[in-house]
Image 1 (cartoon, rainbow, N blue to C red):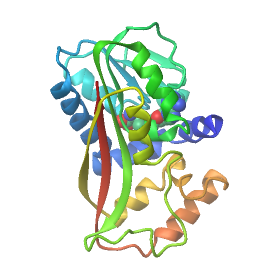
Image 2 (spheres, protein in one colour):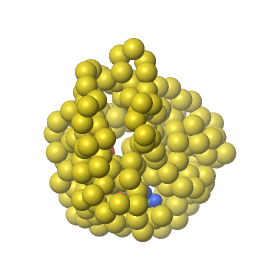
Image 3 (cartoon, rainbow, N blue to C red):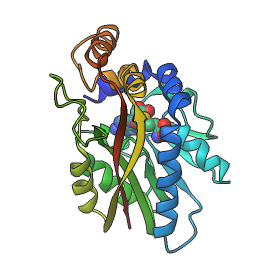
Length: 238
Ligand SMILES: C[S@@+](CC[C@H](N)C(=O)[O-])C[C@H]1O[C@@H](n2cnc3c(N)ncnc32)[C@H](O)[C@@H]1O
């Protein structure tokens, strides 16, 4: 599965960037997550690991606040666009760092992409200094304004390798975790743009080729209409 995830993200930087230009969603998630992490940390955060840093949307938010994060990702193509001085191509389930290296580990929209998040959570615990803080966000889903699940009437679910609740369970094995929910107004057009990213269309049709899965996703979502809401779960642990 890791090879498939890496391959899918290697194909995704352009469409991922286009989605972010339309919505600003991942930048907003990063800002909110960092704010929640700083609020929970008893000491100033001087060193961050951006775990699953991708093309650098989350990394840029840290750079803008004066931090110099280490950006780690499985995908070389995503990392090539990341502006961090220190970039590492690696799996966050087996971190290539010594114990007690960081004050904070942030999984901005990444921890739900691994099938065994308990391993990544243990690794985050290991590389964090005493008093260090971990943060993660994971998608819950999309609803219409009447609260109905957008995917309910369709014959597909947009599934992550690990659901939001399982991400929380994994973090609780290694941390004392607080959690909450963020809801964003969005549109059917944005939902289609998200599923035009090869790695995201794989949520719907993992076995099809990238081209076919995007075509099928656009057909599936063609009649979705009206204002929508997207829901995310956040977790912060110490
Ligand atoms: C949705 S993107 C988020 C990227 C970035 N944090 C942002 O805010 O835009 C998820 C990233 O997690 C990476 N990823 C997924 N599983 C990973 C793993 N096991 N180890 C390292 N990176 C991983 C993917 O390659 C992808 O770049």
